[in-house]
Image 1 (cartoon, rainbow, N blue to C red):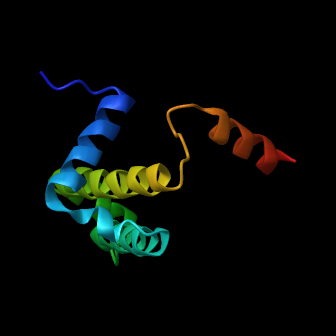
Image 2 (image 1 turned 180 degrees about the vertical axis):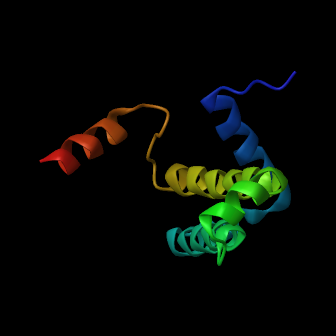
Length: 102
């Protein structure tokens, strides 16, 4: 059974990238552009739809939304990993919330 802990997901991502030789594309710039692209694909699922239309169509979009969110998360984790930002510890998030509330 696949473990779903943060460290396991990070390891899986690293193994996936290494097996395909994609680490050569792991510059911050490339990963940021890939992240923007994936967020665009997610946004496209919701584009030009009224709230009423979204509420009726969302069940059929659920799988697509989940896949796009997974793509965003995978790239975000790669970017964090290559920049030595450990998202498994809440320090960065708590600090950001604190700074944003000032």
